Image: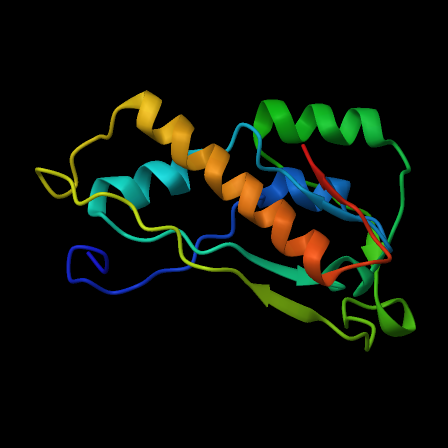
Length: 150
């Protein structure tokens, strides 16, 4: 409804799978097979804007205990069980700087019918553009980390 009214929305693309890969000092995004946000933008003629929070993975200490069974549960049941803690071993995040990078908008074509499902080839084209611009944005502003896209 918001997009039909011409309003902007924010979509967090990584979801529960990305929470399972979170590790301090590493920038990991689950994006290679995540195309729903691109499809949504194309179906409404909305621009895609690459955004990334550098340092957000440092807010919590995470652990790789029982990673295999937890990933299986996440993939098959959609339930993520990240093992983590923040300050004082609580869910309160550590006080760390988070630098939000905002890229240039990627304009999409206006669809003939608002809300119509876009062509898969067009989705793939704009998904690739988004990933390229996100990598370039990260590389331009971050020197001590590499962006890993899964």
